[in-house]
Image (cartoon, rainbow over all chains, first blue to last red; front, side, top):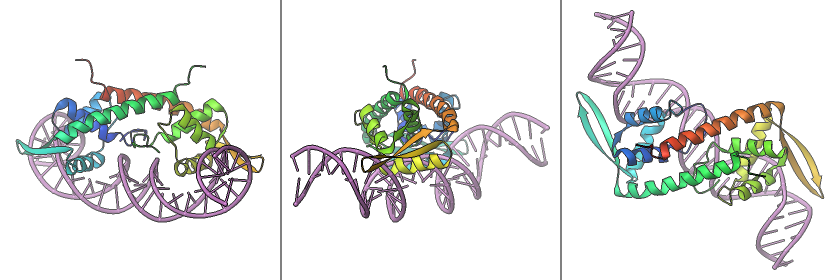
Length: 110
Length: 110
DNA sequence: ATTATATACATAAATTTCTTATGTATATAT
DNA sequence: ATATATACATAAGAAATTTATGTATATAAT
């Protein structure tokens, strides 16, 4: 994924947040978007991403549709109704997580 | 550890940061300090903490000394020279991580 | 022409990290 | 007498990710 293993466990909310903002995306597009957004800091590996997308689809969080671009296939994913409900919950959790980490990392005022 | 698995991979920098600020701590103390600092949000389990402390000690990042308190034993850990060097590096990584996550989670200004 | 890189999907073995369960033992509060 | 808190530890299992591998087309570079 990248140099540190801090991102472990954050992949799902990241992907869902991107899908919320972009309506629909295909796998490769997600990897490129994350690389671009984070200036290369975070590189999602395919071995992590594709199984996650499959899990989320199997769980009714995402739905997909294939599309032919020239001779190539793209599999577009988007949030289902249940997915849209969950993404907000995920975001709240991430925000709490960020604040909590800050409490520990940044020395509290004396 | 807690409800979400967002914290996966963050335990090591958290523990090292606490040791940096407090000079020396024992395992149980670390679990209580984290619970207190995060108002219960993050509860480190013993099954995660003790093996980590052992790994870090084996890797020359931490050193320990036993102390008898009444009839009980406490094992105090502190950063070695190498540990002090690494903790700063860890903190930088966590700060970059927090900023990067923010880039993704908080919709960029249009 | 040929080779390397980019696009685009996928899976599987191995690793890492953590949870859950279990064990030992003392101290204190009910 | 019992439950909870303090204090260490390990081990089995689960979950998420890395690394490696595979297929296939498109494009850029030599």
